[in-house]
Image (cartoon, rainbow, N blue to C red; front, top):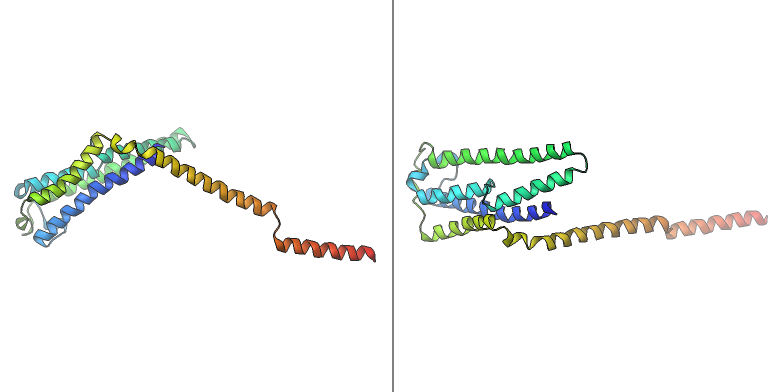
Length: 212
């Protein structure tokens, strides 16, 4: 199912993009002792390489086409539409639009944060305390950003390995549901020991009454 495949891809993409953003926040806090958005501004001029990595990670986080997140979100939206068709086409369209709006609102928030962090007015002294990334830091950031870009451009690297696992998960779930339902049916159709005792006692009483 496309929704399950999209969910797995999205988890991997989320780990790459958000993981990169967390590392970059740690970079800022380690250099300046500050981590609030209001403590920074104009970093693109002071640390241009760092700004490139931040922009790449942020665009990956908002599922820009070409990034792994876009592949996952597209398959999730396709799965939402397909599964909602069981009610009606109108419901399917409405559910897909609502899910799509969450992407738009998320992108608006991230882009505004980028503007304030990298291109906004310099606030305080935190920005001045942040140097550009060195070789080791650039390698760490680059692996995460390039990984997201690679999976976005060549999604078959991961999507080809998902369907079998997803199908196995669905089959295991269906088997579990069938097993539980079978146990419920057996419990209803088969009397419990207490029911058997009550039935035997009732029969004995009726037989004694008939003998009299």
